[in-house]
Structures are given as C-alpha cells and as structure tokens.
Length: 277
Image 1 (cartoon, rainbow, N blue to C red):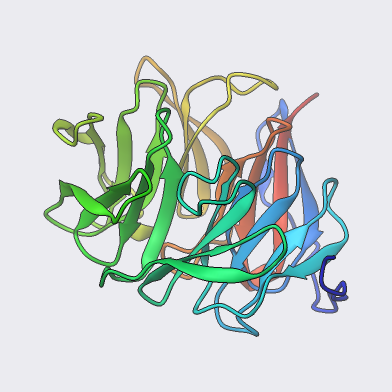
Image 2 (image 1 turned 90 degrees about the horizontal axis):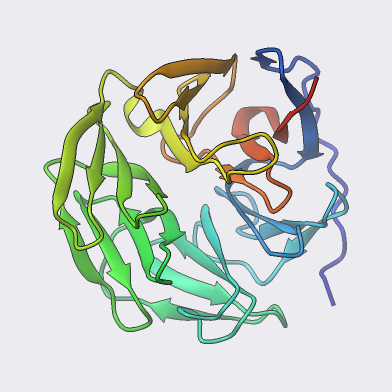
C-alpha cells in the first residue's frame, strides 16, 4: 500500500517559463521542494527532495495523487528507477542517493543500503544501454557499477553534475567550469569541449527520445534557458525563465510519454513540456 496521500498546500506560482511556438508548457504537479526526477515504465514519477521529512514522493500517472514513498532516507535528493533490479537486486525498486550512500526503496516500500563504500553525496544517476549504472558524486570523478561495488570509470579535473548517455553509450557530463565533456563507453575522453560557457552545476542534460516531436538531440537546461543542441552543432533556444537549484539538484528528464519534465524547487512544482501547436 502507498503511504497516505499528502495534500500539497504550498502555493504554486502562476507565471510559467516561456517556450517557443510548437512547444507547450504546463504545471504537471505541485510538489514541495522537488529535486531529481525518475519515471517508472507505468508513468509514475518518483521525486527526490532535499531536507523536509527526508521522504521521496511518488506522483501517480497523470500528475496526481502525490504520495510519500518509502521510509525516511538520508538526504534523498537523487533518484533513479531500477526496473530490472540490476543494482537493487529487486525489480521495480527506486535507487536513492544521498548522504554518501546509495540505497534502494523496494516495491513493498521497505529500504536497504545498496552501497556504502565511502563515495561522496550522489549528484546524478543514469543507466547506459548495457544496463550499467553511471553516477556522479561531489568528487571529480564518475563511478559505475553493474551490481558489484562501484568503481571509478572517469577521473575528472573538476567536479561534474548532470549526466546524459547517448545511443552509442557515450557519457555527456556538465562540469562546474561550464563545459560539456564527452567520454566513450570505456571512459576515454572523446571531446573535452563539446560546449562551453554554460552555467556550470546549474546545467542539466537529457537526450530526446526520438518520439513525441522530440528528436534524439541533446536538450540542455542551461541556468534559466532551455536549449536544444542539434546534430549539426547548431543550438536552438526552446524556452526561458526556468528556476533551477539548489546546485546540481534540478530534475530534468523525458517521461515514457515522450514529454520533458523539469522540477522547480523554489516554486514547489514540476513542469511538463510537450510538442504541439
């Protein structure tokens, strides 16, 4: 059974970011202090949070109801749905990063620590095409695991925040100096300056699903601006006026409906961006 639904009583600001013609934007759900986001295949959205009552939220498909999911966790601001149970050991669990540990909340809403090996606080987590977990922490490195204890995949000159993985299993990293670097699947450097002059740890990366009007291009939330990086290197401004933060904490993901979802921590809401007239 899900925990009792919590009424969201915090105010949701009415003003929305602006998006270019051909895109629609709306408030998907009010949620207090939302951070990282991860969808289950059924369309349920799991929401990391900073502080508060140390509970992550589950938003039912369609945007409501909003429920607390699982027991209190340690600083549960990074989440990732583990459908196959590759890391948690139990299918349809939710991985939770925070406080120097990686834990899992199982479908029955019990929880357990998966890894406690001395890494720093988890910033972002993604699966690549082979099912490996790739994640960043507060140190200048990228770690990986296929179910065993994490190992260092990439050693970096400075810290990285957001991660995206393309169809060739290349890892795109937003570094705190405002660059995006690309690494091959084996951790070797492919491009040290794919993009420069960005917003550092307030830069968030997600590859379009190739459906729903979104191609396979890289979408970048660069501070308050939403930008598309086309395959030919051209950038297109999609929207502006987004609220980001705390640093490395904004949720920025495509859902199973092929729409793009963005968390706005200070405005207590999650936005949905879709293609349309």
